[in-house]
Image 1 (cartoon, helix red, strand yellow):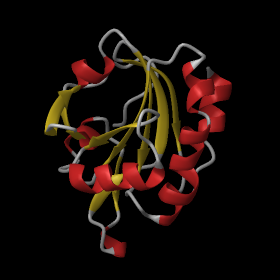
Image 2: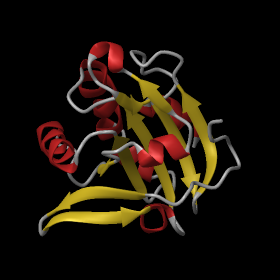
Image 3: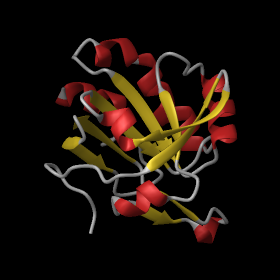
Amino acid sequence: MSIKVGDRLPEATFMTMTADGPQQLTTADVFGGRKVVLFAVPGAFTPTCHLKHMPGFIELADQIKAKGVDTIACVAVNDMFVLDAWGKQSNADGKVQLLADGNADFTKKIGLELDASGAGLGTRSQRYAMVVNDGVVETLNVEEKASDAEASSAQKILAAL
């Protein structure tokens, strides 16, 4: 069963890259006492994620944050090194925080995993975007097809704020 509006995010740990190297962040660290837009992609550098989904959040970051959002974060079932490289190539620094869910622990706990083994990608995340206020889901937009980035787009989230 997947997470829904009104649910509290489960406890989980993400990895992120900092200037001092890899760092663990818990859901409490990321979402506690804060309003966060979280979007998920099936994979860094994959066509829709890299060319459509991430760029929208980077472009609209200032407008989204002006609506009272403390952080825009992206989670992917990739390792922190890949996400760090993707963030640098995408110019996400200071706009989108990248959260590695390398073993899909968080993704599975919220019931939004995607079996992409047919494409040689293994377990990944479905594409979605949510607004989370102090750990509670206020808005949740999940794409019907992982190749789409419409319902979970930055434009849709901005309109929902």
